[in-house]
Image (cartoon, rainbow, N blue to C red):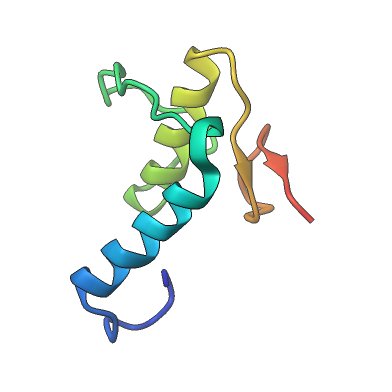
Length: 80
């Protein structure tokens, strides 16, 4: 859904997300976002990387690992 060049309606994306969360059942939970948003890792030099960096730091703060398909996030767990 991420790389659809704006051709997906918010309602469609919401429905996909709802289905994904329902399929996970009890193994899914949201983390409280308790970061200030003012500190960034050194590999985050620009606004283009702030979402990746924020999610990485959020996982780290809660003693977890960020799992991703993006090989460009240092320290994250790369999924095959």
